[in-house]
Length: 496
Image (tube, rainbow, N blue to C red; front, side):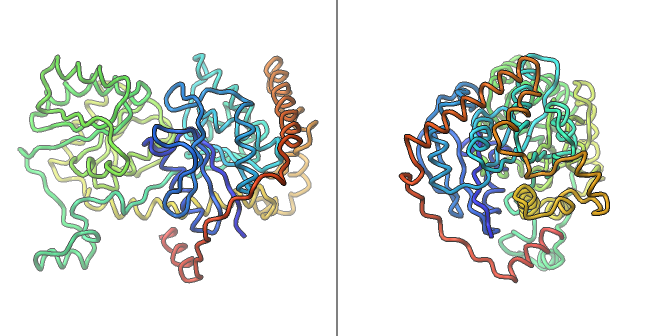
């Protein structure tokens, strides 16, 4: 039996990005597995109200004020009437919020708990502990995660960061990585997707499913691709400092840079100062479906990020057959095997040296990038991500026993229950919720309790003024029927 799930986040299409892609891909795969999924996000230019995407995925674009980097103004309570209406109309059972900086996510989880719904939170980012922005974000996260059923992180580094920031029991946090649709990020010459062999040699290659290596001569031009939001945390300042040095040391190298952001002006000024317009091509913002077309123009993908929980874009680059140069920060070292990457410290000198090392390796033909696509396809699968997420839903809904969900020996059940809770037993009782919020700090705990009490009173008023029986139930999209053979094939694909 499937669940009715609402994904809540400020970040969703048409805005491009890793979180947006994650929510879309996970939702479509959960629909394939027999669940009902809707998306709740804010309105974008030209998109307000209800939209349907591929696979019957319904998106609610709620018209709220956007203040910074596609996040809505945090009103705390004014979203509740609209949210309650959507939840009742769609008969939602589980609310799954994404991203620490999403106002919609935090408010949706608060309101969902008030309405007696199970909740899950997925963290996609890393945050510090010292600056004012991180301190406020961490306190907000502690407020939200004090009353959530389970937390998912996209890497083990992200899990450690989230556990420390929100003072969580590590056993209440699962690690489920991102993935890619390998078919959408394929090299130009991959035999499985070519239009047809032109000669016997290509025909033999297609049958063997092993593409021919492409050798670079000493004078061939090597193109370095960069696709990123041009923000400080994405390492744009590091990139600006490194580009002139890389191009000066390697005459037959050029850059292709795609993306937009406040650092775009600094990048353009650097090109003008160093007269590098003929060797650096700025594409500006690109849509997600155009990312592959940009990547296949390059040989190396440069990722200078200063903080990253996972880094889906480097998996996409490797799938396209690019050699990856990236900073050794956050969860990036967990993403790809060593033969696909050259790591650098988040410093200018080390980034320049690592890029030079990658260029030398390609010219010496020491890296078999033509094999990367098939290897990435075997490592990452959205079907596997959806299945593991579904297991979390089973755990918080009580379908799995405590021993099955946590994986402990049944003989240790007594001692385990005495010291640990289990996913899915977060009480909805008002007094229990107040106890959890009160423990969040001397002053913050009292403020959180006040917010929760006000939220509960608003819920009672809404129940009286707009009774549930007066809200029309939305018709469901026709369910996809997956026969047993298809499910077995999915299982083999995700394992293989």
